[in-house]
Length: 483
Image (cartoon, rainbow, N blue to C red):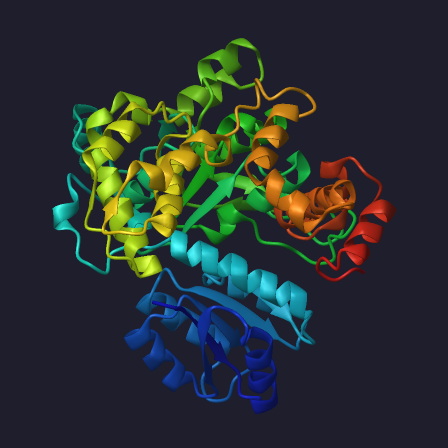
């Protein structure tokens, strides 16, 4: 089923222009010029993302936003306006808007905002957990299901039931790929805050200064490129739940501000003096040993104890072998539907091969292997030959262990290139060096810009290059819009 984008604007020319911009995307596009009709569509069709103009006749865009969030709290709404007033932006974010975009549109930035809003919406779908796949209907998606009947997982389900409805701070520990964010969403969706916002922030993906601005917001002029006041995630999430992934990567400075929020539920925006009070539940996650980080003096002891009021430990897949057949069954159903296959079961020898695999990348690695094997399966039974090559090239699916990757990431890139190198040679004979280097640089630049919310100053610092060099690469690779 396609995702849905609703566009509400009383200007017919703008509607047609935006339709042209998004027509190539894999989503259904619905154009509306009437507020009530748009709200009826939200009620009946549940779109994933809505672009709503603030200045609408009869019922303002802010009123539509408030009513839409009551109908579907998970809807990602991007507000637009031609009036560049700070108050509009603040009100929109306080009422639950995902983003705020001004006219005339920068189409690259608008498309980027829609893609991120769509990702946020898909991740915010109701998460539930189950012991087996027999309880699942044909149209349910594996992305929002936690599954498992091992003793360890049963104890986790029990604890979710006990603590979800409290406001206690939660710490989730476990290796990468074990489902920490899904568990956080399961806690949220069983809490009394489930109709309030849920926002996830990856603390490892953002530079220190940008993470501070992302969490706490900033005032106009607080730093270079701070052209307007920004409302941070804590302020946006007032009354709801915030999930701080990879909390162990947060700097000591930001840890101090987070500790104050935990203790007093208050903070100041970057560059501001006004104390902001909020009511936010914090769920944090890490794949590191925070106790060791405390011993190494890179994580505050007082923050550690404030975070682990309720402590979950998600076991790695190799310690819950009995859950592997259940997960395989779940993923086969999901990807069979996705690719139009009719795979009914998995061969005994294939299952034995999968159970014997170490699964360093945990559930995420298993999911990717089944995804790829389903594509190449030629019958109704998943056979060893359908997935053996993917298990041999497992570095492309598992989490990279940066501790053993080496300073130059030689092993990482070797394992990524080796399975596809022959094809690269055939396609780019004589230009392999130039093609691969250009692709890697383009990917790095693009990823840094996304992780920095398209802020060139932060992206340049993250990459360790000058802003002029960054601008040159953005123009060369046509990434976003250059200033």
